[in-house]
Image (cartoon, rainbow, N blue to C red; front, top):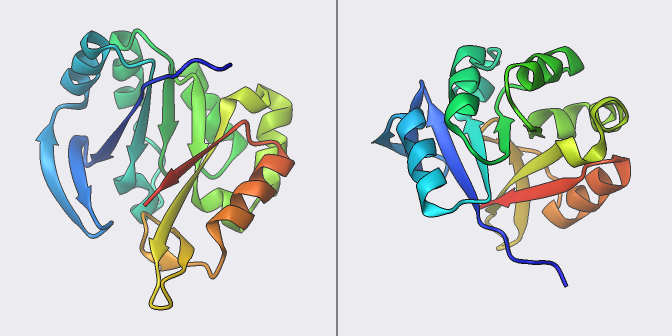
Length: 173
C-alpha cells in the first residue's frame, strides 16, 4: 500500500505567493522563500510552485526565483508556469527543479509530454489540469491560468497525458 504524502502547492504571481479565488482574483500572501521554509517546517513531502504570471504573459519562468527556492527547499520541488519547451524544462532542472509541471503545453502540444518523459524520465513530468464547472454543470479543461476554455474533459485529458508519458497529473479546480 502506498503511503500518504503531503504535497503543498504555492501559486505565485509577480514573485508573490497568492491565494487564487476562482482563477480570477488573487490575494497576496507573501514571499515564496518564506512560504517554502514554513512548508519544510510543517512536514510537506513535496512542494509545487505554479507561477501563474508566466503562463498569462507567456514569459519564461523566473530562473532566479526557482534557484532561490531550491536552495531553501528540503523536499522535491515541482515547478510550473510558462513552460512550453524542452529547453525551458532543461534550464529549470539545472536551476534546481526536481519536476516540471506543464499545463498549456499539454493541450496545445501534447508531444512535449512524450519528449520530456523520454529525456528526463516520466517521474519528472507532471501535467497540471485546471478544471472548471461550465454552465452545463460539467467540468471542462481551461488553460492560461484558468482563463481559456478548451472544450476538453479533464478525465479524458488526464488519461491521454498519462498514456503519453506523464508521471503525475495534478487537478486544480
